[in-house]
Length: 355
Image (tube, rainbow, N blue to C red; front, side, top):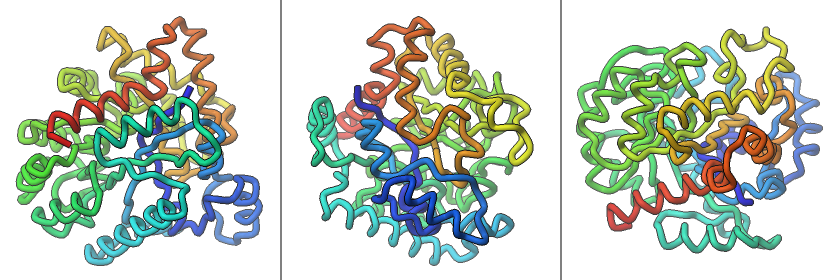
């Protein structure tokens, strides 16, 4: 069975962490063991590990954020520099497309053909990616949405951590800023999808009042299980279900089990099976399994020290298949959670806007 991961910061890892993601994960780890300013544990993501786990399609981000080794000033002060960083990350993906490693997916026809190909992949079948942007610092004004769309951007999450230019994000309570409504209207006009991940609660509700196009939550877990504004409330989950969204389960330990503290709690206290609590919670609210998927966020500024302890690399996402079977999920539901809910979401979304 193929898999779909709805959130990976691949270009950011390559450019900001100097990771040669075409190399085996063991080689990347060996290289990073020599670094004197190492900030995370072993990385778990590479293009090879994605292929090993038959994770044939991902949402790949443009993330204009400085290396986490400077955690106090981890965001660009200059928005022009953020724009340039995002353009550089886009060049990285496009070069891998030219080399045959990747396939860019930006419309329903390409997605349909790519998904069918990954039902029986060969060693030469490219990994597919849909281009997203996490945070809106690289959108210098709302009119730039059309430029980014023409460059291939299909999803925008307007917020990340803290206040963004158009709204508020995780850890920064507040609503849309002055140009936030115009940004959302431009997104809807050109057909760019809205990722609500990281939106502060007030920004979340205000955004949904303005934007009536397709929405998703690429990497989110449940606040009912783990308190904190980084998680979705049950009311937010309900409105996402009503709007036909899919919610990707995130594999960051502090988002999985309550009370888990970065660099303090023993990683062995979290296992992949713990993520099923969040998946099942959403399924119980929905009454079905059609709104759950994977949005792992692995290597999103952390490594093995902040992952479930039985996950050695991203290829181990496949362990979810057996765990869901043991939980009593049907084969159809498992196939949906592992990839089909996401592919069907994008098919619906893109066809509704004529893409």
